[in-house]
Amino acid sequence: MRYQITLQPGAIQYIAEADETLLDAALRQGIQLPHGCKNGACCACKTRLLHGEADRGVYQPHALSRYDIEEGKLLLCTAYAKSDLTLENRQATREIPLKLLPARVEALRRAAPDVIILSLRLPASERFTFRAGQYIDILLPDGQRRSYSIANAPEEEGTLELHIRRVPGGRFTGQVFETMKVKDILRFEGPQGDFFLREESDKPVILIASGTGFAPIKAIVEHTLAQHIVRPLRIYWGCRARADLYLPDLPAAWDAEHAHIRFIPVLSAADADWRGRTGFVHQAVMADYPDLSQHEVYACGNPAMVDSARKELVAQCHLPETAFFADAFTFNA
Image (cartoon, rainbow, N blue to C red):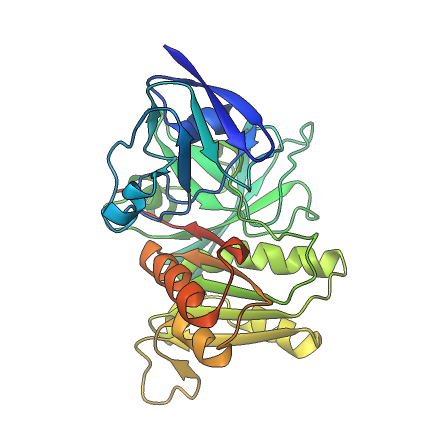
């Protein structure tokens, strides 16, 4: 059974099969919708159902509350159409087409005890187009996927940089840390996601990262520098301990060399000699910016941080909901 999905405003239409989520159907047809975790945890793809009948699927209760359901909301990454649907989604766009490509491992650099920076070389005959902040899916031999943000700007052609944090029992991360070697071949599909800088705006930008959520933040900053975009950028990087700030010198150099960039590291479990900010990273933003009504916020990292940032910055710091953009990382063992 196939159903027609209409996104308003704009009347963007696509077809969803009965056995695929509304998000997967849109991405398959080149339509980019706000999303993050793809498994009902981060609420980045929350959307209002205007007309029709849908199965909301399996989701985390914190991502879709009873109040949300009463308002007609659903999560695109878990919901299935049961009739033709009309959805309210103001950020839908027809995007860069997906490509399925091989890539050769060019370098593996241990940046922290549990973080490897993986550099991939793309085929010389292929041009891979993406927006800074988007991600790719690494395809495993059995068809499973693992998603990783691209950490370099698109201006750096021919290579992709990924920041891989080891997940205990992780199938792909175990391969990266234990058996992967230079010249190995991987297959990937991308680009994916709607986490990228809205360049039509001139608002000051707050960039919030936790852990390896720094990867797409790095790509966005490098892109702005390559394009001479001088909107004020404030980079808040939250980690547990000092060792988790696996590339501290890079954002510190941006801060020192560019008047419009400031870098604020935040540790939640700092040692005694740490002289910087402490606590939760989004709360550091709230302390510095009690009024975010004229800002845009881009947050990337673990779902708990992203969800807390979204709720508290909107509720307490007057951030418009439409000015919060996010990519929440979830991990597969």
